[in-house]
Length: 327
Image 1 (cartoon, rainbow, N blue to C red):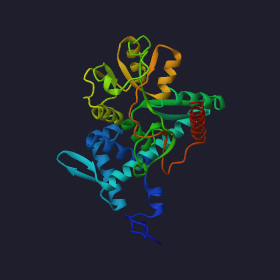
Image 2 (image 1 turned 60 degrees about the vertical axis):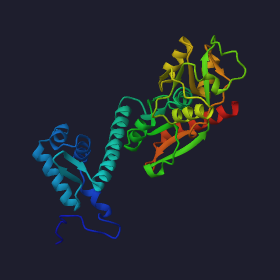
Image 3 (image 1 turned 90 degrees about the horizontal axis):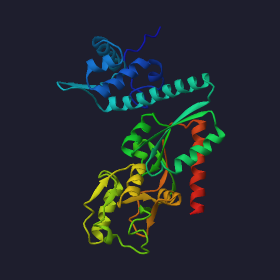
Image 4 (image 1 turned 60 degrees about the horizontal axis):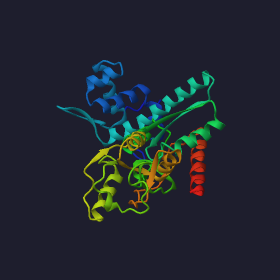
């Protein structure tokens, strides 16, 4: 009779055989791995998953013994994952997120709805593209819940990698393949300068960026890629970037500030035209530097989209295509 293996055996594909992780890893172990990564302290991690510290220490030791790999490094400062640990933690988050999605879908079905999608909306897409696509999606899926999280790429893309989001809509400026993500571009959208309709500059037919350096501006925050492009454009025009500024990434706040003050604001073209059509703001005839990348949808590599998410992506494509035809 064959005895159970006590540690992972090397295979031609790597350290672990295909069946090993599937048959041996338990959800409680995955929860502990994620907790250790978040807290970097055995006592706090154990408490967060309702375990005693000795039990958590034994569970981690047993897991490392079974895998034949050291996952975490211990030091006086606490505990931190090594390369093996980081890899397993990343996948543990995805597994737990998938289970959480299953729970949400089962609850939704029991309540008479048909499921739930969670999407991230970067600021460039949040005010126009996402609402129009979601409205179209809801016509076909009236009982499907859509949760929209608005934010920046720094916050939303890691959440997508962890499996907390089904997709992210917005602009990207780099190849995401190395980050476990893929990007489908819809269109390139230039930036525009807007002011309130009664602003002294609103009736000007021709303006240069160099003429506006002394104005009050609402600009993206320093970490935003477009802020750097805008500052560089002023310097190339022979002027220092504006000093009288408000730094904000909120389209709604920026719109309200523009309407209530003489400030100038930078907005994506579709959003600027949308607010101009509603009245209250005017788009100035100023040439701005191009954004760092196109607008599109980001999804996770190797994680199939739910059927409803595929329909939402198609709605995004359709809305984007129609907007380009109308432009």
